[in-house]
Image 1 (cartoon, rainbow, N blue to C red):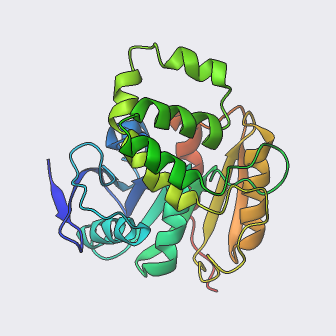
Image 2 (tube, rainbow, N blue to C red):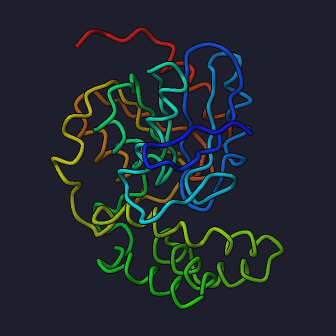
Length: 268
């Protein structure tokens, strides 16, 4: 498995497939690069697609202490591996990480984001302001299952009864195995899920063409989030994928990404 070395010395595992312009895929909570493999397979006839294990997951390292800046440097190392510039797609909390990376990295030429999980109004319960601390305490006390449940119920707004059934499912040990990385995603999302408008200055210099996507079958709060972000960014367009929820299919996502990333940009 190839690796790139991030600025702090952390080895970041990645896979590359396809041909054409470089496209880096950034996933959200719980997942490693295998989750994005179906997207990569459909996109690979048109792009050189990079999928990677975010730090602390899969075959990547996990140098402490954590910071969002280090995760941005991981993406920067992949961009350098790709030749110095790349398109970037991010999903869920990975979309917010991609946004933050676009603030600091000059090599991102276009950006596509699927359902960044902001809570900008009263369409659902907000996340408590001390949520990162709550997760840190659960992980520190050896309760990864409880941390994962808290993230899914409080962060993702999934009913408790549904999560209770998940905890007895065969896949649950794999969820607990990556529960420590939920602190990373909660840190990325900190302050953006509290039922207030998005910070006006956090992404003020994200000026590259940006596509903000959501799914028509997703809960209302995802639509509010997509609309708020599309209004905030300077050069953003919004597109809703019919019949899709938060777990978007490759068959629905890939054509939208291909059209957006392949289109000739209008000079700004």
